[in-house]
Image (tube, rainbow, N blue to C red; front, side):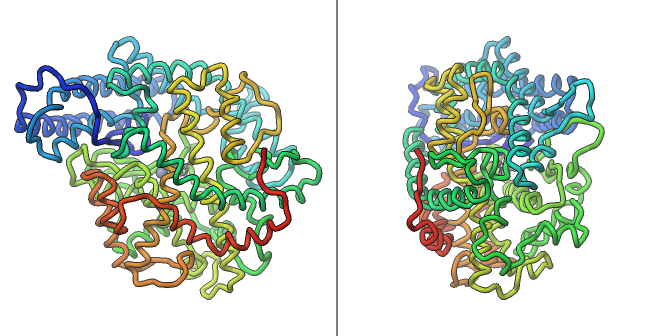
Length: 607
Ligand code: X8Z
Ligand code: ZN
């Protein structure tokens, strides 16, 4: 199973204060009984873990009607056990003298899943079937010109490649539309899914499923919402300057084609969701030709394979003192898209048995994007390995954003210097211009992502709290895309479309705010690791490759899992228990001043 990713995530998220009314039966319980209860839960989860993770693994690596049934059934059993245990745990709410670790475990119990299920058996079964169907629909999604002829079909890889590899307005628009059409059929299932998880959340005493998702950050749901707004306001000016610069360059690339309202057309960023603009680097690099950052070409030229790409990433982690990956990792992971069946290709990292059977599931292409994603996935894998010795309820990230930030932090170390050292383009002594180019490349991935990272769950929070209704799903989606990203669709969208479904995490029911948080946190982590490595130069030039002191500091954080509030864990690493965008702003300071210079006299912003 994959604690940070799945609909039925184990130890996904947690909270401290539940603010619920005491239960009448509480008087009879005592603190020792609470300890025994928690020990029993930890054992029960462990006992059932392998079966459910195996069902999930096969359902995603062999998509067919049979595995869809198996995983729905396994989820049904697990969710039903969870509901029963949450019910039982209510007796301990008012027990005096309960040990803090026991209290925390009980709080974490009801946050075990991102898919709270109604107790009613018929509704529970309906929910798990819908969830499996949506996941399978995304994984097997294809756009065919003739349904009866498989050779006329294109999958997400193929359609994404069109967007990433050419700047042809019409071809890109056709590929973009083809993929978004795949999601149309998910609309009805999604609306029902939202009703059912809301019912489940209410049974667990949350206002709705979004309220439950927001309650998993060791602060109130309302404070968490404010926290995300605060972080966004810190980084918004940087994003706006990048958006402005990119838009003007795109206007030159496609004269007369862009709308006059200041937005960027959704289909021309080189990425299906406009969440990562790295493909636009050749168009946007500040100093063309002064540096070689073509990792794509280097990987191909050096005959890298999926396995050697992983070995290269593993080498980074072992260089900072992390252990080697177990042999079974290479034997059991899925690295390539199989030719003979449908699979969920969206990259993920799995812990199958809580004791070392860790795997990744990817469909690796030999390119830079997938190379970087491998570093991301290994971050999850090392988090699993680091906290595997904790009680099961604590085996998750300090919060889910921490889990996403581990591998991303390591990605920040893929500097020109590191790349040169391992023979993948780069330069050992990059010039000032070359460093600025490298900044732009990072920003197209990390800064362009920020508004996207925030808006997905604003949409879902709205769906769950009822402010976004099924007849306005798509309109609300594009209103948020415009508001945050300054991105707009090129072809008319309507309520016959279901564009949120074209993004994996919506049919896959993976909460998304974690990625927004990770994009802030990873820079805070990197700043501390560089400090631990004795580095004192500009943050964006630091690489901790080979530095054991930095690695030890990072590992110590990972080992803590969710055993304490994330604020304490963050404080131990950084001296401050608060998420803070000052590190990402420091990191991109040189690029930001360059962008402001470039944008002088240009019209920025959108309406
Ligand atoms: O889903 C992922 C990872 C797996 S946790 C590949 N990411 C988000 C996405 O692809 O949308 C990483 C960055 C954001
Ligand atoms: Zn991830």
